[in-house]
Image (cartoon, rainbow, N blue to C red; front, side):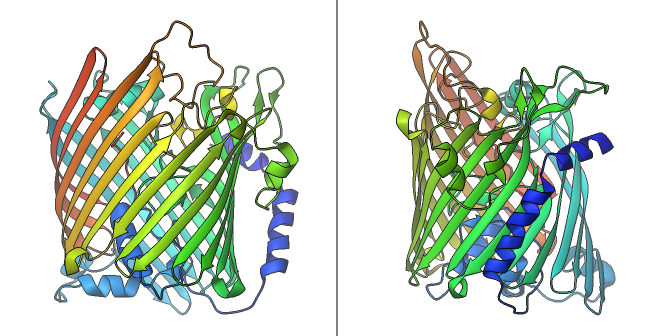
Length: 534
């Protein structure tokens, strides 16, 4: 562990990062008071409730950069709306209303809660009698004055999955979005763990700096073609500032990411993985009260050479200015960088209706790119708590890939943007309804993907975009998935809920048809997204 930690820290040039952050402080400083600085959960259910408040025409919050800071959202009103009768017994309050441990003194607050997911289900198309998930964890959160917040947590998991998820885990070596695994019980179950956390500091209201291990999301929809929380957590340094009385937001993320290829020469029992470095910059502008426009630049930098071994990232990796790297190195996917550019937009038609979209540009010389269009509604048909998302995504062949897979737009063998990779068209429809503590969700996904050979050349960004396809016919695969959930929120503060669910998935390609028909019941805390709709 010590070797891994030192390796990760040493790959960031402290002088370059400190210089960049210092410049931001000097440029954007404007002294005001601040509030608690923890990240809010990056989860679809929570996100819908946050966005329902942010969707109001008079609201001036920037919606595209997630996870949101606690100081940005009035979560007190959200919790108040869900409160039932107050319980008198200590056990009742701890189970259904409060954090398990809560300590408050002067300007210090500490919360400690369990994390868990205990579920049992069955895939009616499989021979395995029972599919189990056994997740245990712990979440610790603290506020130290109004300027510093700390959050840390860990999950330990043993699980068995429907066949299509297990096949993905075996092929990629990772559980979707949750990192590496080890198999046990004759290879039918998976053991894996996931750690996360951050230190968040806001010296002034207009500046927040974070150092942590986690995910990020750029966009207004269910998917993102720019940066999403699809892949596993990664070490990061993030700075977010606002200008022009809050109408302009700028965020820079510097992250150590990696492949799952081992470094050949090593002195430890388990060799380190070949590293990569990533920078993501996003500039968002509020145009009037109704429109938000954003500009994105994401770059993957080489950190390993098969001849020279570990090498430093190009100096432009540490410049905290959007488009600086593109100006220095060009926008094509060539050499030691893989650049993804994007536009993000949102328009509010009313308090209950907004449209959004993204344009993604990857290697313009070869016409690689993507398009997202979406519509989001809140309190549809004047029914409080009924929300919908309708979204279309399309990405061209070979997008996100590079001539050298060591510079692909991926982390831990998963896509950094859309889970389907490239060369696809997708339609997503989501209906969510919540009344007090009762909730129901319905998610429909239809997709078509073109690919060459069993390796999925052209649609798998882990592969080189220079692989020959001579003699390989182009195949079209289709995926249809519907996920239903019905549940009851036991504790809003901890995300604890009891839920029953059903997933029906069909995947087809010439000569092969795979089905999943999965039902389950579970008791869980839901503070993160799990993307099994791929």
